[in-house]
Length: 152
Image (cartoon, rainbow, N blue to C red):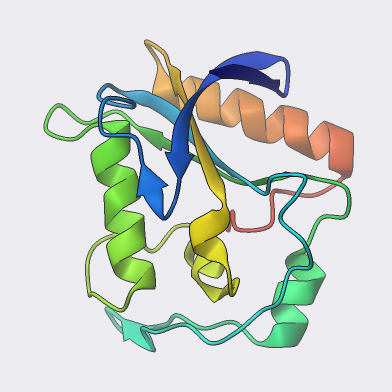
């Protein structure tokens, strides 16, 4: 299944609670999306309190201030590693949100959404993931006036 976000066509990778194993086995850009039927977003505590000396949890007020009304794209990330794929990097995020001390600090606010496992992940294969991410963040900012909810 494919869908357009920010004028680019992404491949569906599953929900964060049920990734499709055959998807995202390449470099590129990934996005975490709140589906239309997600329901009310409720914030909670992070399972991991500190990572490499940084406090992981944001306050409810900080999370509410970061929230972008009417935006389903909650985070834009990239993978340009020779040893990882988009899917492997997304799995690291999931481990981080479940309280493991792994290198996946970006997008930390996603783990404070109570039903984060019901969020969707979408993949975009591309030759220059850094430039693609930069362009997507710019397009998002132009549309909403701020960065996606979980981007720092």
